[in-house]
Length: 235
Image (tube, rainbow, N blue to C red; front, side, top):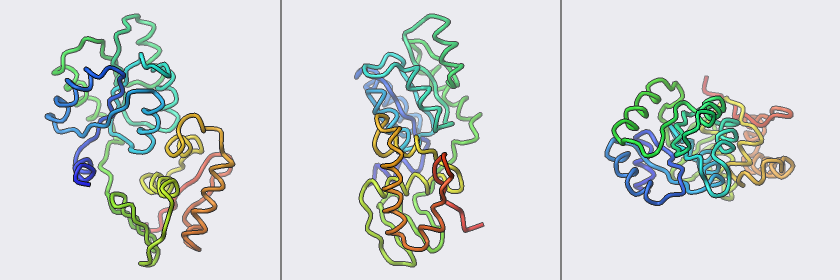
């Protein structure tokens, strides 16, 4: 719990690389610079963590063991606008252009200088308008959600949700009044192999609305053919 609380107080970087030594030497440097660090060793894990945790920035290696980094970047951009800096040993100019065209904000070749990488991270985050801190407590009366303790209340009464139902609600809460696509929700909760299981998602959303009661039907809005939106009743 203390680690989760600490991540709420600083920008969080998702480091995606299958080389353990990269994590060993880069994580301490990032943490010393004041960043929280999330780890992913595969492309599938990277997409799942990115959708669930909404990092402030992703450092993405292209040479991943399961999914090519270019594909990961393309999938990531389907649901996230957070900055991405590509870290790769691939030196071909075409690779750099492809990564930048797919939505990367910067490209750093391996081996790289840690000081230069930190400077590029600071520069990208300064330009990013979406890297705002996320509160851990959410109130959209009469709904209250504690994202850290994973507690939900309606009109002060606790609501019992399954882990997946809570993850669906949490993603909508973190993006209140924004449309979250079927793909993002399915990736966050079930992983990238389930991005087409829209009917499965509809069943879970039905259960979630039922458990929240009348407020669930009024707050959890369906965007036909696109996804879902948590309506903001505080404004």
